[in-house]
Picture (tube, rainbow, N blue to C red):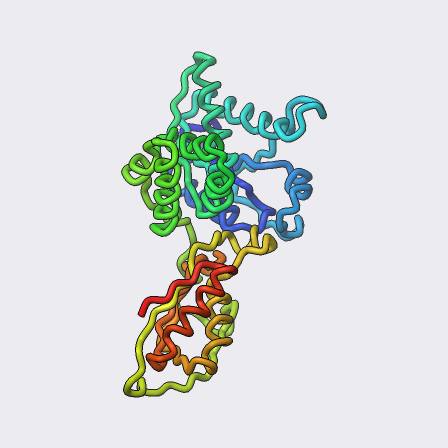
Length: 338
Protein backbone atom coordinates (compact mmCIF):
# COMPACT_ATOMS: atom_id res chain seq x y z
CA UNK A 1 0.00 0.00 0.00
CA UNK A 2 1.30 3.46 -0.91
CA UNK A 3 1.59 5.79 2.08
CA UNK A 4 -0.54 8.96 2.04
CA UNK A 5 0.55 10.65 5.27
CA UNK A 6 3.70 9.99 7.26
CA UNK A 7 4.94 10.80 10.76
CA UNK A 8 8.69 10.61 11.36
CA UNK A 9 9.97 10.69 14.95
CA UNK A 10 13.70 11.21 15.49
CA UNK A 11 14.61 10.04 18.97
CA UNK A 12 16.68 7.75 21.17
CA UNK A 13 14.13 4.96 21.00
CA UNK A 14 13.82 1.56 22.67
CA UNK A 15 15.73 -0.09 24.20
CA UNK A 16 16.88 3.19 25.84
CA UNK A 17 15.35 3.64 29.30
CA UNK A 18 14.16 7.22 28.97
CA UNK A 19 10.89 9.12 29.02
CA UNK A 20 11.33 10.11 25.39
CA UNK A 21 11.59 6.52 24.19
CA UNK A 22 8.25 5.84 25.85
CA UNK A 23 6.78 9.06 24.49
CA UNK A 24 7.94 8.16 20.97
CA UNK A 25 6.21 4.79 21.24
CA UNK A 26 2.99 6.40 22.46
CA UNK A 27 3.06 9.05 19.71
CA UNK A 28 3.67 6.40 17.09
CA UNK A 29 0.79 4.23 18.21
CA UNK A 30 -1.63 7.14 18.50
CA UNK A 31 -0.61 8.49 15.08
CA UNK A 32 -2.02 5.37 13.45
CA UNK A 33 -5.44 6.36 14.82
CA UNK A 34 -5.10 9.99 13.69
CA UNK A 35 -4.82 9.62 9.94
CA UNK A 36 -1.14 8.65 9.57
CA UNK A 37 -0.67 5.41 7.66
CA UNK A 38 3.14 5.36 7.77
CA UNK A 39 5.03 6.00 11.02
CA UNK A 40 8.83 5.85 11.14
CA UNK A 41 10.95 6.00 14.27
CA UNK A 42 14.45 6.95 13.16
CA UNK A 43 16.99 6.19 15.84
CA UNK A 44 20.51 4.89 16.47
CA UNK A 45 21.96 1.40 15.89
CA UNK A 46 21.88 -0.86 18.94
CA UNK A 47 25.72 -1.13 19.18
CA UNK A 48 25.98 2.67 19.19
CA UNK A 49 23.52 2.92 22.07
CA UNK A 50 25.36 0.21 23.97
CA UNK A 51 28.71 1.92 23.42
CA UNK A 52 27.31 5.22 24.71
CA UNK A 53 26.74 3.69 28.14
CA UNK A 54 23.03 4.61 28.17
CA UNK A 55 20.69 2.65 30.45
CA UNK A 56 19.09 0.01 28.21
CA UNK A 57 16.35 -2.56 28.58
CA UNK A 58 17.18 -6.18 27.74
CA UNK A 59 16.51 -6.52 24.01
CA UNK A 60 14.14 -9.43 24.55
CA UNK A 61 12.03 -7.20 26.83
CA UNK A 62 11.25 -4.60 24.15
CA UNK A 63 7.62 -4.92 23.09
CA UNK A 64 6.78 -5.05 19.37
CA UNK A 65 5.22 -2.06 17.62
CA UNK A 66 1.90 -2.18 15.78
CA UNK A 67 1.78 -2.77 12.05
CA UNK A 68 2.39 0.52 10.27
CA UNK A 69 5.24 1.54 12.59
CA UNK A 70 8.78 1.00 11.32
CA UNK A 71 11.87 1.50 13.45
CA UNK A 72 14.87 2.51 11.35
CA UNK A 73 18.46 2.44 12.55
CA UNK A 74 20.51 3.85 9.65
CA UNK A 75 23.98 2.40 9.15
CA UNK A 76 26.97 4.75 9.47
CA UNK A 77 28.28 6.51 6.38
CA UNK A 78 32.03 6.69 5.80
CA UNK A 79 34.97 4.87 7.33
CA UNK A 80 36.84 5.06 10.60
CA UNK A 81 38.31 8.46 9.70
CA UNK A 82 34.92 10.06 10.44
CA UNK A 83 34.20 8.64 13.92
CA UNK A 84 31.04 10.15 15.45
CA UNK A 85 29.74 11.86 12.32
CA UNK A 86 29.29 8.55 10.46
CA UNK A 87 26.13 7.68 12.38
CA UNK A 88 24.83 11.24 12.19
CA UNK A 89 25.34 11.24 8.43
CA UNK A 90 23.48 7.96 8.12
CA UNK A 91 20.53 9.41 10.02
CA UNK A 92 20.51 12.63 7.95
CA UNK A 93 20.72 10.64 4.71
CA UNK A 94 17.75 8.47 5.61
CA UNK A 95 15.69 11.52 6.58
CA UNK A 96 16.47 13.14 3.21
CA UNK A 97 15.05 10.07 1.50
CA UNK A 98 11.89 10.16 3.61
CA UNK A 99 11.41 13.89 3.00
CA UNK A 100 11.71 13.64 -0.80
CA UNK A 101 9.73 10.52 -1.72
CA UNK A 102 6.50 12.43 -2.28
CA UNK A 103 4.68 11.47 0.94
CA UNK A 104 3.37 14.44 3.03
CA UNK A 105 5.41 14.20 6.23
CA UNK A 106 5.39 15.55 9.76
CA UNK A 107 8.79 15.13 11.43
CA UNK A 108 9.19 15.51 15.18
CA UNK A 109 12.57 15.52 16.92
CA UNK A 110 12.80 14.66 20.62
CA UNK A 111 15.96 16.20 22.13
CA UNK A 112 17.48 19.13 20.27
CA UNK A 113 21.01 17.76 20.31
CA UNK A 114 21.56 15.96 18.03
CA UNK A 115 18.11 15.03 16.70
CA UNK A 116 16.77 18.48 15.79
CA UNK A 117 20.13 19.20 14.17
CA UNK A 118 19.78 16.08 12.02
CA UNK A 119 16.26 17.10 10.96
CA UNK A 120 17.34 20.64 10.03
CA UNK A 121 20.33 19.36 8.06
CA UNK A 122 18.14 16.84 6.23
CA UNK A 123 15.59 19.52 5.39
CA UNK A 124 18.31 21.76 3.92
CA UNK A 125 19.72 18.91 1.85
CA UNK A 126 16.27 17.84 0.69
CA UNK A 127 15.55 21.39 -0.40
CA UNK A 128 18.83 21.57 -2.29
CA UNK A 129 17.91 18.50 -4.33
CA UNK A 130 15.09 20.39 -6.01
CA UNK A 131 12.73 17.48 -5.40
CA UNK A 132 9.18 18.18 -4.17
CA UNK A 133 8.95 18.26 -0.37
CA UNK A 134 5.79 18.47 1.76
CA UNK A 135 7.22 18.69 5.27
CA UNK A 136 6.32 20.16 8.66
CA UNK A 137 8.91 19.98 11.48
CA UNK A 138 8.36 20.02 15.23
CA UNK A 139 11.21 20.25 17.75
CA UNK A 140 10.47 19.25 21.33
CA UNK A 141 12.85 20.44 24.04
CA UNK A 142 13.33 18.93 27.48
CA UNK A 143 15.06 20.36 30.52
CA UNK A 144 18.30 18.48 29.92
CA UNK A 145 18.65 20.15 26.50
CA UNK A 146 19.24 23.29 28.52
CA UNK A 147 20.96 21.97 31.64
CA UNK A 148 23.22 19.58 29.73
CA UNK A 149 24.16 21.73 26.71
CA UNK A 150 23.25 25.41 26.97
CA UNK A 151 24.20 26.00 30.60
CA UNK A 152 27.47 24.17 30.17
CA UNK A 153 28.18 26.34 27.15
CA UNK A 154 27.37 29.49 29.12
CA UNK A 155 29.54 28.47 32.06
CA UNK A 156 32.47 27.66 29.78
CA UNK A 157 32.04 30.70 27.55
CA UNK A 158 31.14 28.65 24.47
CA UNK A 159 28.83 31.14 22.78
CA UNK A 160 28.77 29.32 19.45
CA UNK A 161 27.62 26.04 20.96
CA UNK A 162 24.77 27.69 22.86
CA UNK A 163 23.76 29.74 19.82
CA UNK A 164 23.68 26.58 17.72
CA UNK A 165 21.13 24.97 20.07
CA UNK A 166 18.79 27.96 20.02
CA UNK A 167 19.14 28.60 16.29
CA UNK A 168 18.46 24.93 15.55
CA UNK A 169 15.41 24.94 17.81
CA UNK A 170 13.94 28.11 16.33
CA UNK A 171 14.54 26.94 12.75
CA UNK A 172 11.71 24.43 13.10
CA UNK A 173 8.14 25.14 12.05
CA UNK A 174 6.91 24.49 15.57
CA UNK A 175 8.91 24.72 18.81
CA UNK A 176 7.47 22.97 21.85
CA UNK A 177 8.57 22.25 25.41
CA UNK A 178 7.41 19.39 27.59
CA UNK A 179 6.22 21.69 30.41
CA UNK A 180 5.84 25.31 31.50
CA UNK A 181 8.87 24.75 33.73
CA UNK A 182 10.96 23.65 30.75
CA UNK A 183 9.89 26.72 28.79
CA UNK A 184 10.94 28.92 31.70
CA UNK A 185 14.34 27.20 31.69
CA UNK A 186 14.68 27.78 27.94
CA UNK A 187 13.78 31.47 28.11
CA UNK A 188 15.95 32.03 31.19
CA UNK A 189 18.99 30.46 29.55
CA UNK A 190 18.37 32.32 26.30
CA UNK A 191 18.27 35.57 28.26
CA UNK A 192 21.71 34.77 29.71
CA UNK A 193 23.09 34.41 26.19
CA UNK A 194 21.35 37.61 25.06
CA UNK A 195 22.73 39.58 28.00
CA UNK A 196 26.29 38.56 27.21
CA UNK A 197 26.25 38.77 23.44
CA UNK A 198 23.36 41.00 22.36
CA UNK A 199 21.35 38.24 20.68
CA UNK A 200 17.53 38.05 20.75
CA UNK A 201 16.92 34.38 21.48
CA UNK A 202 14.88 34.94 24.67
CA UNK A 203 12.18 37.04 23.00
CA UNK A 204 11.88 34.55 20.15
CA UNK A 205 11.61 31.61 22.54
CA UNK A 206 9.06 33.40 24.71
CA UNK A 207 6.91 34.13 21.66
CA UNK A 208 7.24 30.87 19.76
CA UNK A 209 7.65 28.03 22.27
CA UNK A 210 4.39 26.26 23.09
CA UNK A 211 3.70 23.54 25.63
CA UNK A 212 3.28 19.98 24.40
CA UNK A 213 2.85 17.71 27.35
CA UNK A 214 4.35 14.27 26.66
CA UNK A 215 2.01 11.69 25.20
CA UNK A 216 1.21 9.36 28.07
CA UNK A 217 -1.49 6.91 29.03
CA UNK A 218 -3.18 8.90 31.80
CA UNK A 219 -4.80 5.79 33.24
CA UNK A 220 -1.61 5.03 35.13
CA UNK A 221 -2.09 8.25 37.13
CA UNK A 222 -5.81 7.90 37.92
CA UNK A 223 -7.62 5.46 40.19
CA UNK A 224 -4.28 4.39 41.57
CA UNK A 225 -3.89 1.04 43.25
CA UNK A 226 -1.57 1.71 46.20
CA UNK A 227 -0.15 -1.81 45.90
CA UNK A 228 1.18 -0.94 42.42
CA UNK A 229 2.77 2.45 43.17
CA UNK A 230 6.55 2.73 42.78
CA UNK A 231 6.98 4.04 46.31
CA UNK A 232 4.70 4.80 49.24
CA UNK A 233 6.54 6.77 51.92
CA UNK A 234 4.81 7.73 55.14
CA UNK A 235 6.75 9.34 57.98
CA UNK A 236 5.28 10.23 61.38
CA UNK A 237 5.39 13.95 62.13
CA UNK A 238 4.95 15.72 65.43
CA UNK A 239 3.33 19.11 64.97
CA UNK A 240 2.78 22.00 67.35
CA UNK A 241 1.51 25.55 67.40
CA UNK A 242 4.28 28.05 66.84
CA UNK A 243 5.39 29.25 70.28
CA UNK A 244 5.01 32.96 70.98
CA UNK A 245 8.06 35.12 70.48
CA UNK A 246 9.68 33.16 67.65
CA UNK A 247 10.69 34.86 64.41
CA UNK A 248 9.95 33.49 60.94
CA UNK A 249 12.67 33.13 58.32
CA UNK A 250 12.68 31.67 54.81
CA UNK A 251 15.58 29.60 53.56
CA UNK A 252 16.36 28.80 49.95
CA UNK A 253 18.89 26.46 48.38
CA UNK A 254 19.19 27.34 44.70
CA UNK A 255 21.42 27.92 41.72
CA UNK A 256 22.14 24.23 41.26
CA UNK A 257 22.55 22.66 37.85
CA UNK A 258 19.88 19.98 38.15
CA UNK A 259 19.46 17.46 35.36
CA UNK A 260 17.79 14.19 34.48
CA UNK A 261 17.73 11.77 37.40
CA UNK A 262 18.33 8.82 35.09
CA UNK A 263 20.89 10.12 32.61
CA UNK A 264 22.82 12.53 34.86
CA UNK A 265 22.50 11.03 38.31
CA UNK A 266 26.12 9.86 38.21
CA UNK A 267 27.61 13.32 37.59
CA UNK A 268 27.80 14.46 41.19
CA UNK A 269 25.18 17.20 40.87
CA UNK A 270 23.72 18.57 44.07
CA UNK A 271 20.19 17.75 45.15
CA UNK A 272 18.65 20.92 46.62
CA UNK A 273 16.22 19.00 48.84
CA UNK A 274 18.96 16.87 50.36
CA UNK A 275 21.28 19.84 50.84
CA UNK A 276 18.64 21.90 52.61
CA UNK A 277 17.68 18.91 54.77
CA UNK A 278 21.33 18.45 55.80
CA UNK A 279 21.64 22.14 56.60
CA UNK A 280 18.52 22.11 58.77
CA UNK A 281 19.44 18.84 60.46
CA UNK A 282 22.75 20.30 61.58
CA UNK A 283 21.33 23.59 62.82
CA UNK A 284 17.84 22.67 64.05
CA UNK A 285 18.66 21.70 67.63
CA UNK A 286 21.66 24.02 67.95
CA UNK A 287 19.69 27.13 66.99
CA UNK A 288 16.25 25.92 68.17
CA UNK A 289 14.92 25.94 64.62
CA UNK A 290 11.39 24.68 64.00
CA UNK A 291 10.46 23.77 60.42
CA UNK A 292 7.03 25.00 59.33
CA UNK A 293 7.16 24.29 55.61
CA UNK A 294 9.52 22.75 53.06
CA UNK A 295 9.02 22.54 49.29
CA UNK A 296 11.42 21.51 46.52
CA UNK A 297 11.74 19.77 43.19
CA UNK A 298 9.55 19.97 40.11
CA UNK A 299 9.11 16.41 38.80
CA UNK A 300 9.87 12.86 39.80
CA UNK A 301 12.67 12.29 37.28
CA UNK A 302 14.59 15.56 37.72
CA UNK A 303 17.40 16.33 40.15
CA UNK A 304 15.98 19.21 42.26
CA UNK A 305 17.64 22.57 41.52
CA UNK A 306 15.90 24.57 44.25
CA UNK A 307 14.30 24.01 47.63
CA UNK A 308 12.59 26.44 50.01
CA UNK A 309 11.75 26.21 53.69
CA UNK A 310 10.00 28.40 56.24
CA UNK A 311 11.34 28.08 59.77
CA UNK A 312 10.78 29.69 63.16
CA UNK A 313 13.53 30.37 65.69
CA UNK A 314 14.34 32.69 68.59
CA UNK A 315 15.11 36.20 67.25
CA UNK A 316 18.55 36.23 68.89
CA UNK A 317 19.53 33.14 66.83
CA UNK A 318 18.75 34.67 63.44
CA UNK A 319 22.21 36.14 62.93
CA UNK A 320 23.79 32.78 63.77
CA UNK A 321 21.55 31.14 61.17
CA UNK A 322 22.63 33.70 58.58
CA UNK A 323 26.27 33.06 59.44
CA UNK A 324 25.77 29.32 59.05
CA UNK A 325 24.18 29.95 55.68
CA UNK A 326 27.16 32.00 54.52
CA UNK A 327 29.45 29.14 55.48
CA UNK A 328 27.19 26.72 53.61
CA UNK A 329 27.46 28.86 50.45
CA UNK A 330 30.77 27.11 49.80
CA UNK A 331 28.62 24.11 48.83
CA UNK A 332 25.67 25.84 47.19
CA UNK A 333 23.71 29.07 47.13
CA UNK A 334 21.69 29.50 50.32
CA UNK A 335 19.76 32.64 51.16
CA UNK A 336 18.09 33.53 54.45
CA UNK A 337 15.30 36.08 54.44
CA UNK A 338 13.94 37.19 57.77
